[in-house]
Length: 405
Image (cartoon, rainbow, N blue to C red):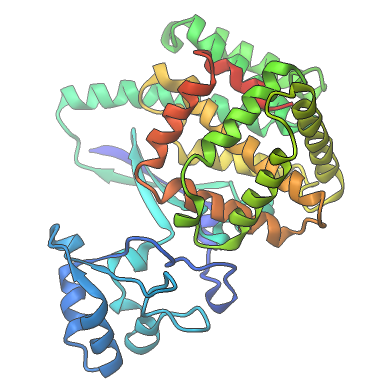
């Protein structure tokens, strides 16, 4: 027998659908597949409205039993089973057991990593975003132990080696992000230094674990004492990198992919801000980012973002969700780059918006949920952003640190 761990974060346990109080629509503009059993249940429903809607709005795909059909949305991009008060007609009339697998599971996900099964939830759901960011203990984890039949010795040995090393790095990263500091940027700088150290020793944790532990502890002590601070982001190089990062994120037509107005409104603010400045006027661009960065510092001391766990929970969620450092350790810095790039954009957007209005918790939740809908519910977005990073980073993934200041 083999020990199999089930990891469940606090926010997963506390989640409850907000229903009509939801800040956005979880079924707006997405591909909602219906399995064959559920498809037949709707088509032959005794409820006339469900039956007629199903016949009009379920398009056959026949991509297997789990993707037998797909819901065809109405002219407003909404699910035809959606009510005016943001509830589901199927759930109302047929009960939760009648929901398709896609609808019943969202925003829940799970994935295997080493000897673990990790339960998770997508931050594209506004209630998940609220729980993760604003519940202080949302990232505490609960562990259950199951016993399962062991695989062959060969596979067990390989899985054990892979899981042991990567999970150790995960724990080190978790501790660095969790450490008390003067600000989350300092934690990110410490994590970057730790990644560089791991690369220098070729990730040899088996033979050098005491050294690795000592180095990590030194970084944590430096964070606790305020000795680590983010690098300056005021240089010409930093300003140009920030500008390229923003343009890379919004490279596609945002109107075709964003379900709600929060991200779209921020995009308009960003476009208006940048249009006022000549792209060749580096000093003016530097001034914009300096003002926005100063505004961010103010938000982190006077707004709903002032509690230290808000951004800390966000990055712990990022580490947990991305299975940091990933299976391929050669891509660890690229994974870090993506986390920093996402943070930079969210930080820039909220700071810019706060120059026009007071920022409250709802503004933060809506932006985070919309952004993760934008980057997570498009199968091509990960590759597009990865290619964009290749175009903007000058061949140096460590340049992402310039996005912090």
